[in-house]
Image (cartoon, rainbow, N blue to C red; front, side, top):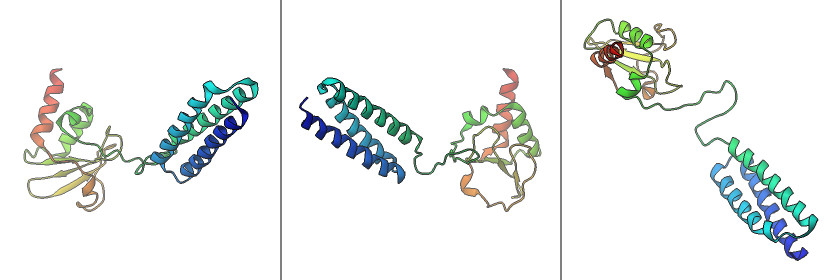
Length: 186
């Protein structure tokens, strides 16, 4: 390829890399990906036209640079999530009867035990976390509300309305009892 045209293409890709770098710094995930796709497309057009060792080496270096950018973009998180050790990521778990049935038998036995054999009680599961041992709230027939930790099934301090937006739809005592009886048959 003619050196001046090659240089022009290479500079265009480098400008896109600089733009991508700024977008990554601003944590603009979608824009970074779009810029990467454009730069990668230009590199794909340039690659077969490269002639001579210098141009081929330059294409290889650009490819490595784009690979590094791709890794940085991959590490970006979409809005509403965070990364790093010890960070909390909201999953917004959708609880339905099938999902509840996937909880361990021992966990559900403790939930049922905390429902105090009140056949009119309802349990609400927390919608954040991993969904393995969710915190939960029980509403009894007399209107009393009790909060429990999912890990130890201990009563939890706090007002009944606290965290109400992070709760599932209610599951009646009978539904939990039915799930446990099905598990026993398996």
